[in-house]
Image (cartoon, rainbow, N blue to C red; front, side):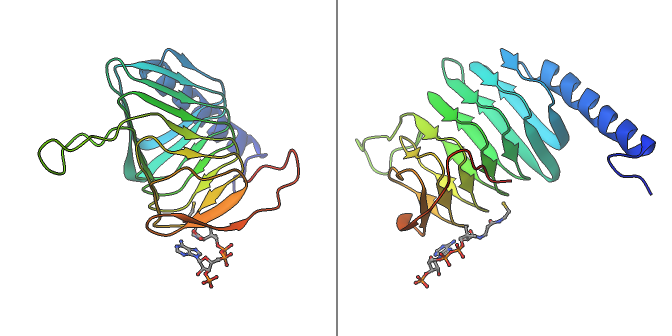
Length: 190
Ligand SMILES: CC(C)(COP(=O)(O)OP(=O)(O)OC[C@H]1O[C@@H](n2cnc3c(N)ncnc32)[C@H](O)[C@@H]1OP(=O)(O)O)[C@@H](O)C(=O)NCCC(=O)NCCS
């Protein structure tokens, strides 16, 4: 049996890293960090400024992941960020994702409403800022103009329509803070 430490496992890991590096280089990002793992269907459409940090992992093996930066828009993703299957990120203006962030399956992040609800309605548009050490559970949708503070967790199926303070667990539609989290300095989720 091969594991990450056996010769076979080391070879498999090395192959995955090489594949990830090649896909990162072909992605069109202005900068892509080291130790990238990109598996399965991961579609990059990067027509705006896109910067991605080290240890980026995207697992599109079960459902395709889509990462888009529109012309004139900007997307920055920090170090050690994990995207599960089905994640969609669509940056028309400015999407910022910090370090040590976990995005659960089918998380959706968009910074522009795109369509009027009724004639003359104001379209929401604006930066989406996801802090460091944030975990978004399965199916979370983050609305335009929203910030999620460092250390916070958003429960599965929530829709985040307003800013969430740091170190909070928020859940629901719309997402409300359920409780404060006790997070020691330097602790990050895995
Ligand atoms: C993040 C999560 C683990 C938090 O769970 P937790 O710490 O056990 O939550 P709590 O027990 O403190 O819940 C507190 C309250 O919030 C409610 N709550 C928890 N998760 C909720 C959710 N996703 N939506 C709505 N309410 C939720 C609980 O029912 C509880 O309500 P009550 O006080 O009226 O009984 C959980 O919400 C979750 O999303 N789990 C799935 C994670 C996931 O998507 N994993 C996929 C891989 S990334």
